[in-house]
Length: 381
Image (tube, rainbow, N blue to C red):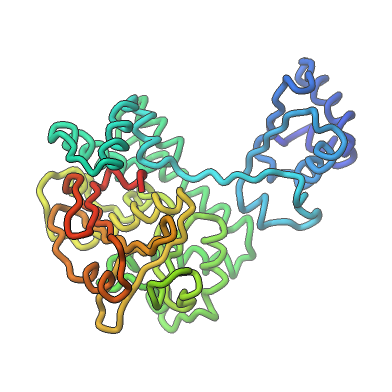
C-alpha cells in the first residue's frame, strides 16, 4: 500500500503492530493472515514513522511478512525525526537491470545461458549468436537498466518512448536533489552531476573540480559528490596506487573517476546520436570508449565489486582492477575489436598477475594469460 492519506495520518499517532494491521484490514477490506499474507509498504520514505514501525513488527509480531520499498535518499540519508531501525530490517539494494536481466526481459533466457556457458569454458561463441548478442548489447546501451525504461522497450520496441521515460527519471533526480538537500548544496549537486559527460569526454577521465566550476575544489564540491554516490545516482571509481591485496588498502582517496549509475541515462544525457551506438562500423569516437567504461562500471557495481583503476607514473592505465577469488585481476575495456594495449602487460609484470581480462567486441578466448570476454558477457565476471 502507498504511504499516504489516512494511513500516513494514522501511523503518526499509532505504532502498535496489532492496531496497524486492524487499520489496514479495514481500509483494504481484506483479512491479513499471519505467515500467509504479504504486506507491502511502497514509498516508505514518505513516512519516517512507518519505517520506525518495522522495528515493532520485528520484535512483537514476527509472524507477519512485511516488505517495504523506497528511495535510498529518503530511507537512509534524510532522517530528520526518527532513527533507522538498525538490526530490525534486512536491507537489499536494487540496482538497474544488468544485461543478463535485460535479456530475460526480452525473452532471451537461452541466449543468457549460452553466454554463461561459453564464458565458463572460454569457448568461442558461434558467430551468428555472437552477432545477435552484440546487437542486443547495443540496444541495452541505449535503453539501460531502469525498470520503467526496459518495460517500455519490451512493449514498444521504441527508443524514442524509452528516452521520454528516461527524461522523466532525470527530472525526478533533480527534484530529489532539491528535496533532500538545502538550496546551496542542491545547486552544487546538480553542477557535479551535469559535468559527468564532460568529465568522461577528457582523455584523462579523472574527475576534475575545475570542470564543474572555474576555481572548483574538493572543499566546495566534496559534499555534493558524496551525496550523489550515497544515492547511487553516480558511481565512484577510486584510483589505487599498487596492485596488491587488499586493494582497498592502496586506495588514493584524492583521485577518482565518476560514472553515471545507468548507461541508458548517460546515453540520453550526452545526446550522442543513437546511430553511432547502433552502427557496426568502428569509429575513433573516444567518448564512446568512455561510455563503454561506464557500462562496465555499472555491471561491476551491480555485483558489489569495489570500483578501482590503476595509473602508473608512466601513464600506463588499467581501466579496472578487481579482487577476484583472492587474486588481483586487471581489466581492460575496449569499445570495439581493436584491443592492442601495453597497460595490461605492464601491470601483470609489475604485480605478477596470474591472468588479466580484456573486454571488447571480440569473441571469447584465452591467450597469453589474458581472458578475452565480449562486452555482452560482463555480467558473468
